[in-house]
Image 1 (cartoon, rainbow over the protein chains, first blue to last red):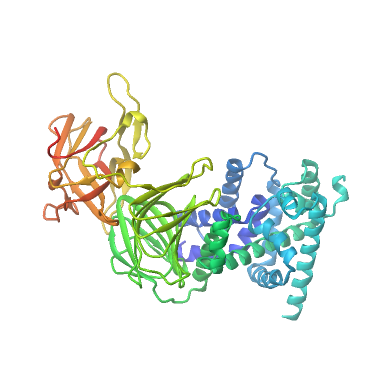
Image 2 (cartoon, rainbow over the protein chains, first blue to last red):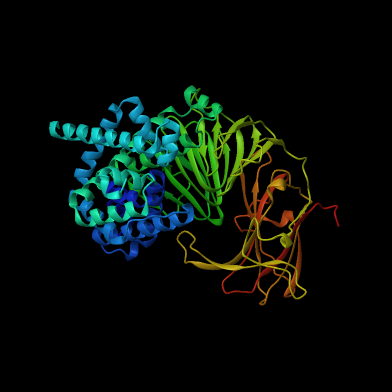
Length: 169
Length: 432
């Protein structure tokens, strides 16, 4: 593939690829870093990639391998979903498609802005600052169970908000 | 609570939050394999995580350079987070911009280019051999060879120079941001708007620059800053400690909290320096060989394929020796300075020598070359600095008096001549 077309393909699929990486890494900064490295490697590999499907499949395999390497380097305890499960998740994301994912993402961002301050702080600590559950529980002065109940409520509220947004769009 | 008593969202939150047990993971895996709604839940959760991260990163990026952000820095409140988030926001913004495919006004131009310089800009467009005077939007620049250097000029006249093996992502949407992934950067920054300093991110530090001249060297574990003029505020990411580095001072930010972050005054100028390869390979390229069988520690040249613009690729066998940081800002090349090299080779062939230099008051000063042929396989060269020329040509500009030496690169062209370097030395003309 020519490099411009390759990059466009991968950038168009960025959310899909990143969403597939997050369950492996569980760290949004690491996801972005791995995606960037995958882009750079793809550029070097452009001549060997036949078409969009080949490029996406190659990018997924490469990104997943980079993610596992990243975990090995940075985490003492590594619990990763097995390959078959990750493949099923990728298939779910493929089924949704980039346009649907992008639309949901836009709605999500609007809904994140509407979260009450404490809820926003909670998800910010978890997904922006990428802190582990116990560290957030300590900062928010909650028990671990109470923290996960609170997070569950925030996610359910976000999903309700997104459904409302998408219904009225 | 037994794992099966959690609903799927709860299991997912605990697993991704690092608090799931192995039994939880097994149960989660079983559900994800068998239940499409569980997979949909995880996909939704992933998108929610990314949405929160992107929103928060964008909000932080907007806040950078404002009094609020500075106050956070001074208070040391999770200071390592906002620069990272800002860097992420820059990357995300760059990606979104690249996706849009629209034309954008140029924010900088390539004022000087030498060696192999690659640019990745909007629309994912890649320029493998950037040329002088090319107008550029935001993007990533990489200098990919020993002799590579690029000076980028912003609209306000501020200059940044990357050299040797360096890479940086640069943007300017009213506030200049540079994400120096690795390597060396020199900057000459014009006074910036109040509250919108230039921000330079490295792996271990964030620099706020209002208007000054300085050099930064970024590695995975340290960031070294040397200020020639003005003041630069450095924030060490590992603990958020900050230091204002004034002119003629230097500082190193590492990953160690134990090391006090403090600026030290630059040492007085020196005219002599000798490499010490017995201490290991630090600051060098090539295969380091320890002292053995009557031979001292040395560097063996390694092959490298170089593709000059519009020419056929050539193979080099090269080593390089960097002037250590403690000498980097003080070692001056005078008109009577000499470069002494000790080495050996298995095939007699000309040796190419490149001196990478900077100006006394900051900024890249160019690469200067000489091409002597040793008299024997076991050789010592003693070369007046005045023999070195810019652009590998005798007609090229000679090396001016008073530059500072950064790095010495020694190589042979073509097949392997078995080049090994034992010592690199700069001596003043009056030194024996």
